[in-house]
Length: 134
Image (cartoon, rainbow, N blue to C red; front, side, top):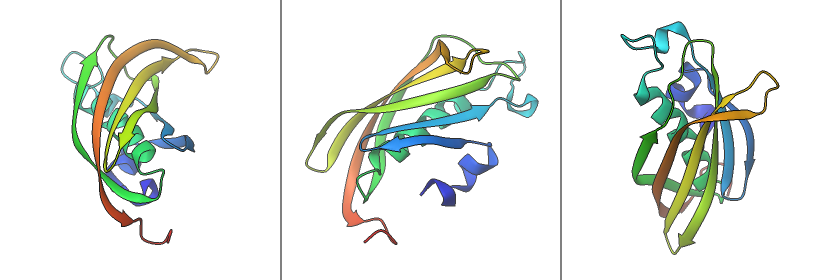
């Protein structure tokens, strides 16, 4: 799914890990991703979290879409920062799911550092298998 996602690919996102109900996606903040204050545009941080959410909620092999999300920004990102979005399923009942995504700024050691944003996504399965996986 992510391989066919032109928006995520265009932003340079990299899938680092995926498992049942989980995913990690990273993105290097480029200068063209900053706003008038030279901070990473909040919409792009939300897009990174949304991409990790999408991978996690589609990890069961059913076409699943976002029903909505909320995001809270805690820190700013800047050009040169590597951001890591870590998605984790919280609940899945029937065709609905809830996923939390934490966006971190990676430290010099490559490990997650400061929390940049917290995202909660609500998913809805369309009840059909992902094409090519059936």
